[in-house]
Length: 340
Image 1 (cartoon, rainbow, N blue to C red):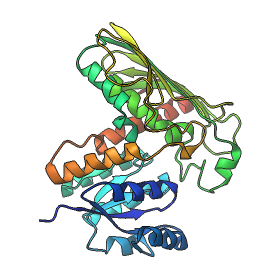
Image 2 (image 1 turned 60 degrees about the horizontal axis):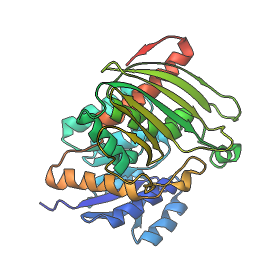
Image 3 (image 1 turned 90 degrees about the horizontal axis):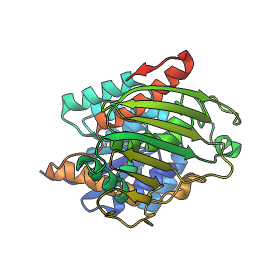
Image 4 (image 1 turned 30 degrees about the vertical axis):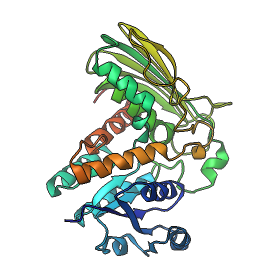
């Protein structure tokens, strides 16, 4: 059987363009067709990538050449598009967040397992050399007992950013604000390093932006291993700052700023360059990232599908940061600690 990954893209905005570029770069992957809410936009990009534009998702899923669908539409559309693709026996790659509720996430995970299909969630920051080095240090007990972690995400998104598209900043299509949109990557890495989250308490509020969702949030997270973490996030920062982690263990501390390690105070030497900025920064502009880590994730997806290698971010992993964010929202509404 031909194991080549042949992709159709659903949603051809900025992120869809990133996916198209990456699919062209990865051996064993081929971009076949696309569809978008704006058919004219899909046609323009289809011409650029020499692929076929389809008028609807149904038309795209009827293309028998496709065995993978990558979903890059607004977050509120992820669940229905992924469910439809799985029902059509297509493997799914879905941008973060995988959907907007844990019930939807559990349904997609169960459906993918029932049909024996891949459900992959984009969380490309895990593929940073620095993040992988920190993860290995945790696994090798170089930190000793994990103590605490601080995650600071002070982004700048002016009102004009939200005004550019009517879905941005809405409950229906964004599902949340700084946490669900910008902050989910940082929260994913926090849990990837510190372990499974056990509970969360926090506050989410809207201070400056005219949007339906939060522009600022803080939280405390308890992990199953007994360590704790804090989350500090906003899109109202002037100026913006690099995303920053301070990870503290019994034997030492590591500081990670975007994807550069600025402090490695562990018994073993730091295995990566402290000035690595491969992934870029989106703190001030969502276009600040490049496609390197997306490429690495698509290579992992290819290797899983073609050679049976472990999938780093499947539906179960994609559910973890979603559970923290939704738990924080619930905690903020009800003023209580939320078990996860």
